[in-house]
Length: 329
Image 1 (tube, rainbow, N blue to C red):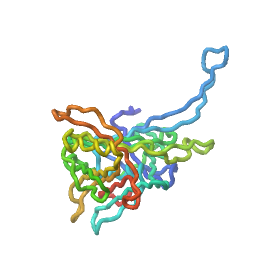
Image 2: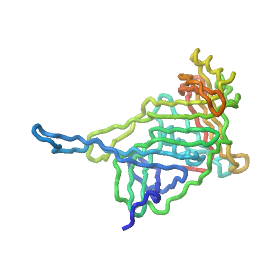
Image 3: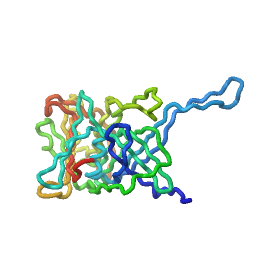
Image 4: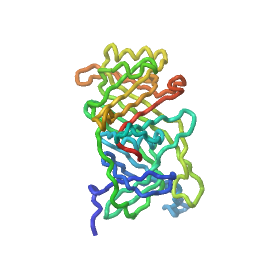
């Protein structure tokens, strides 16, 4: 019998039509790793007069999976954003192979998001879980690399499956550090005007996006549904502590909003359309880090909480535009 070697553990996903109803995992994400771990709440009982446990009873069982990608990808990012922000229909650009995805999570209404069936393993042994729910997502950036991270929840792990044959590999198109620019402006109308030329590194993190509903129902092998919770959404920018970098003291003290754009432009897809990522957000400064030395540069880190602005584009806090070659998930 063949050993279950670590190097052969392939991960495949499928986009569910109905959350929690498993589908064939026919997509291979070559720029992402999804590493599942089985979690369980087991109640035990030791009777009076006895030294050792006599009963163990399983209550909740679920999957927590780590998402990681050392090199962010214009194509793969569509799956992550559709799982944590909302699931849009991409728009073809002209008559080309380029498609524009617009992610705009609502302020008060529930968002329709993508959930996934995940298969992981090899011909030696494999397992799967349904209702893959992306609960957190992070995008970190520096001149060295742009990387993604996150977590996914899922229903109970099914062991000993046969993996979906011949999955379709999603093309890899890396988002390079040389593609990226950061802009910070005082008004929503001016967003994307003032480039910050001394950003040393940064990160955008969204967490606590969803909670899970656990109902008494023998037909459900895990949580029954998800509910939206108030998310934590923060942008951190490590900048040189020069006149521009220290200029954020004023809006912090006044509680004023600022409008930030992260814009990456990659190679041409066709005609004038290029691979592109644009993240626009409204932020308020909520924290400032200690001064630090960064390769000889005196630096300071500012933390922005993503904030809602009713007057910005009829009301929004965050908007992501992604251009790639995917016509669907």
